[in-house]
Structure formats: C-alpha cells, structure tokens
Image 1 (cartoon, rainbow, N blue to C red):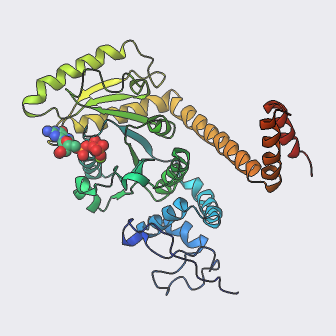
Image 2 (cartoon, protein in one colour; image 1 turned 180 degrees about the horizontal axis):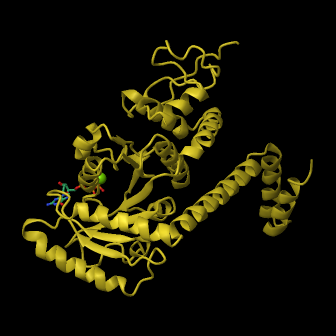
Image 3 (cartoon, rainbow, N blue to C red; image 1 turned 60 degrees about the vertical axis):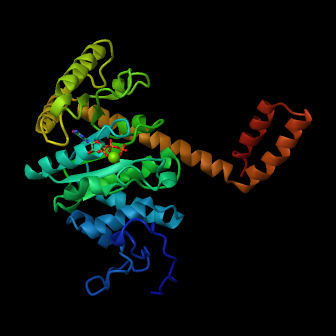
Length: 366
Ligand SMILES: Nc1nc2c(ncn2[C@@H]2O[C@H](COP(=O)(O)OP(=O)(O)OP(=O)(O)O)[C@@H](O)[C@H]2O)c(=O)[nH]1
Ligand SMILES: [Mg+2]
C-alpha cells in the first residue's frame, strides 16, 4: 500500500505538546504497525475508535484535534470516527456554564470539577468561545485558574477551538462532547463567555444550563436584558463569602423574584437560585445535588430525552442548510453566473428577485 506524502503540521501551535502531533489520517488505515509506532505517527481510524473507547487521553486529544481541523480531508476522517463512536456516546450529563467576565466561571469549574472527581465522576471541560482567535483563547486560556483540576487524572480540559464562526466552533464542540462521552467522561462542562449568541448556542447542546452571577456588577440583574436568564435552569450567585455573603443572598432573592415572571427554560423544572463560593467551596456541592435532581426529574418526565432528540434534529438541519449553501455558492457555474447577473441587476435590466430565480434554476440543470 503506497504511503501518503507527509502533510504539513496543521495542529494549532498553542495547543500544548500533546496536540502538536503530526496527524496524517488515512496514511495507515490497516493499523498493522500500530503497536511499535512512534508517537508522531498517523493513527488509523480503528486506532482512533479503539483509543477513544478505551479512554486513552492522548488519542482522545488527537481525535479532537482531528475534529477541529479545517482541512476537508480531516473532516471526512472525523466524520467516520464520530459516527463509529456514536453508540458509546450520550451517557453523560451535559452542563453549560455562562456568566459575565470575572463572575468566577473558571474558578467555579475548578472547585466543582474537583468535587465531582472526588465523588468518582470523570469530568471533561470544554469551551465555546468564538472570539478565541482574536484573544488567543480567553476562555480556558487561563488554565492556571484550573491548575489542580487540569492535573487531576479523572478530568480532561480542552480549550475552545479557535477560528471561524460560532457555527463552526459549535460543530466542533458538539462532536467533541460525543468523543469525550465515548471516552468515559460522565459529566461534560461547557464554559462559554457571555458574548453575542454563544449562550444560545451552548444552550442548544447541553441538558442543563447554569448562569453564574455576582452581586454588585451593575444595576441590572446580569442576563436579564439579553434574555440569558430565560435560558438558565439555575442561577448561582458566586462569591458568597466573607463580607459579601449577605449581599449575595439579597441578590439571590432579587433573582428569585425576577424568575417568577419568566418562562422556565425546561418544562417541569423551576429555575433554581443558589448562592455559592467557588473560592471556599461553600454551596458548590449543593449545585451538583441540584443538577442530579434535575437529571432525575427530566429523565422521569421524558423532557431530557425529548430535548436531546430535538437538539440532534436541529443540529442536523443546521448542518444541512450549511452544506446546501456551501455546495451551491461554491459551484463554479453559480459563481460565474452570479457575477453576470449581478451586473444586469446593477444596470437595472433585471430585478434582484428574477436574478435569484435564474441562479437557483441553475441547480436543476445537469
Ligand atoms: N471572593 C471570591 N472571589 C472569587 C470567587 N470565584 C472567583 N473569584 C475571583 O474572581 C476573579 C475572576 O475569576 P475567574 O474564575 O477567572 O472568572 P471567569 O468568569 O472565568 O472570568 P473570564 O474567564 O474572564 O470570563 C478571580 O480573581 C477569582 O479569584 C469566589 O467565590 N469568591
Ligand atoms: Mg474564565
């Protein structure tokens, strides 16, 4: 079997040594030389699948790198891998976490994650931050805030995929959730920075959505204006420690009153409010108890399953629309005709609607 020529290093250079492996998918689909191979060798599809399913973290990291790659040939490989691990995915509780910058999301995840690992869970921490190309990854860029968790053997932390649109980042994160689940992680935490549409996007890929708020960060209840509160299954007022404790409790009460007027994010679940301190850990175990309660309730009343089904179908439709659009607009005939028609529209010889009709008609021609 002829060897593929070596391909350039494509993994992000800032992703740490374990992600910097030269991945040449497809170069050795037989897996025959798997055992004795050096680290920087391509993995076969079988190796990806069995590595993920046996919980091999290095293989998991490389699979995610494959998913995050923008090279079309990696898309094909990633699709096969994701499809093959699919039967072993899904057995986790997926938790989204949002909040304004400085609310304490990272600190909370550190404390919360360590608590979960202490209970025998395996936690994967991911991030959705479409701005990370510009900021070099603000979310989870600061692994220092999760230093202990990052070192914990039962935890896996993956920074936000960088580059591209929110849609692109979301696709990668959804597939990353699946491979983490297949690798045995039973709690998936998805952190998102509160910018633009990213909360809505993360809401559409998780079971439970937690808003981390703080007291005294402006007059308005955070998330009220932009409708984030309506996405949340719980609001945790963080930094309820020291002198701030009474104020945190009064902020909680304000939120509690405000949610009376809102539609709950999940049928049959009253949006909960809590206070906690990510720093001291007070109130953090209670957040987990609440999430377990949520899981029990929504599993029993069928809401959890319905939500996941709906999310999957919505995702499929989004991919379909994206695919149709790309396929159509990238067609050279369409591009050529589009330029001509644009000129006619500009000259006033053709209406915009008629031009689009003509263009769309192209797709029906052989
Ligand atoms: N007193 C107190 N300080 C906290 C608590 N949680 C976080 N902090 C502090 O708040 C600051 C911001 O915490 P981060 O965890 O980085 O906040 P973040 O929400 O992840 O911030 P971004 O990543 O910038 O969006 C840090 O200085 C933390 O030490 C808490 O429970 N109590
Ligand atoms: Mg953070």
